[in-house]
Amino acid sequence: MLIATILFYATPYNQVCENFYPSLLGDVVRLSKEILLERLKSIVKNCKKCVLWRTRSRPVFGEGPVNAGIMIVGLGPGRQEDLQGRPFVGAAGRFLDQLLAEAGLSRSGIYITNVIKCFLPENRATEDQIKPNFSSR
Image (cartoon, rainbow, N blue to C red; front, side, top):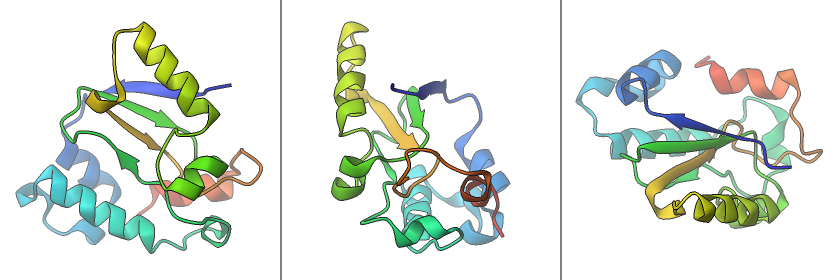
């Protein structure tokens, strides 16, 4: 089953980053979205806040235009996403593509990511694995 949340950017991007990563990103007010995403990607690549980094092939950050009007957020990457380092490329990705097509949308205009950036071996996350994703410490 595809579990994803479609969000519209309701909060200014810099405000979101200030709330979650103030000490890691520096002065976010003067940075572009592209630079902020690159910094976040670097943080994710080197993250070892929970044990999931040990089971991943590569982190799955997200992809799509930084100014997309629609953002799709899944829980975490599956095996195919882990191998390719891209979100929603396995069976769930094919289903998502079908749903988008039926809605007259395409992936190229949507930012797609996951809450958890590392492969979930059991395809579910524990509270201990989720909590570090919402803390800058």
